[in-house]
Image 1 (cartoon, rainbow, N blue to C red):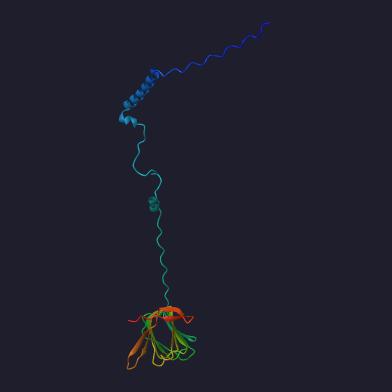
Image 2: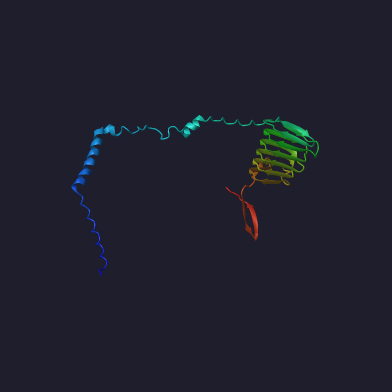
Length: 245
């Protein structure tokens, strides 16, 4: 008995790729030549004929610049400074206090104290001269400039605060003179008061004390403005710094 027929043979291999011929190269060269020929036919202006012409100026010309915005925005006028409030000058006794206030250029002010319970308060005076007669309990010169005060006595103290260019003269007794926050204060003390008066200064500059020195002469002593603090014998000691000529 005969067996099955043999299997068919495998298919033949594919043919090798055909080498690039001269026809393809010629076709590519013809295409490039045609492209350049069409560009040359347009001319120099023809190439740019379809392009949008650009103009000089900002890129976003339609959008307002910061300068335009500032120019368009109205500028508000600066607010006027509030007027300085003025007060009428005063020199009167109110209760137990003499009030000498807001004097400007008054050179002949006189206060006559009739009781040791009365005090004198000099406030915001300028370029003025005040004479205090009698013996007030206290005298206070506050926020004044270029003011001269002449007094006979002060029972407790004469205080000068927040002022500048002040001259104070005591003709009899003043146990204590306090100067706080002042510039350029000169205190004239009598022979009687200079032996017992205490002068207390703080936060002040250019303070001078003048006392009689016999034979009609006077002696001027500046109050120190600089101090040196150092250790001495286990303690901190503060001393005035003197600048000898």
